[in-house]
Image (cartoon, rainbow, N blue to C red):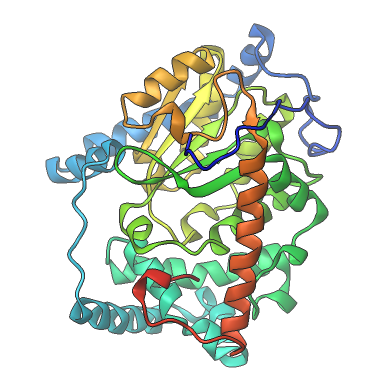
Length: 366
């Protein structure tokens, strides 16, 4: 792990009784053949991998190579110029204008009540980069994110920067537990930030609380330009997850919020302790956006075996915020939360005109 990090650790907690009330399968850790057999009774769970196979077979050779380059960290980012930025912004605004009114209702509301927030060029630039400079895709995702923001935090908070205190208590506790970890000190061999989602550390009464937590960490991060260009790698660590966490993961995927995140996802890796849980992975595939699905890989076995498998994709153990024993680095979890609080507060102050914004592109944030 990065040399500056204190190696204090905290063991994985036992699943809490605050797990979602509609999970319906208790809070026992899912490893048994009986549970896996129950999951497999739903024929729709097999559709994800078939869907992925069909999509791959319909792709051109260049499209497949692009996906594989992303997964394996082969850099092919576009050279950016001032002219590209200006043209991209103009095309993005043009595409926003073409979107049907009912699909951008919340954007129009924010544009009227808080135009500085709706016209934030730094945020628009994040969406352009994360959409590979395809303005029609960036425009759809940009408008959609205001709608999702309203669903998560209410109409009263759509026109403001989301701060720590805007989160539910469950969302705050989940983050403090290390449920969703992001830190630019943790990167793979291709300098892509590693994002770790650990269902065993979720704490909530409804899945929206964890989606709040994920939203906050994504939008409270001051992404460096390098991170924006290279993208991030998501690690979904299902070790120690309760049966309710598997059910809730599927529910979360159905909320259709993943493609509103303002950062490009270059790869998604699922870590499972047991091949009997493959049906869970298959259904998650079917519920996620196509760009995520195409870049997803699954790993089975012990934590050590999973880490060896990740290493073949350029993801060393030192880039993860936990040990092969499953223990998390306690200080890293808390340091990243404190950093996100400060960055979100700085964004709010800049939005309110209480601090001067830098002209340096390296200070891009949302």
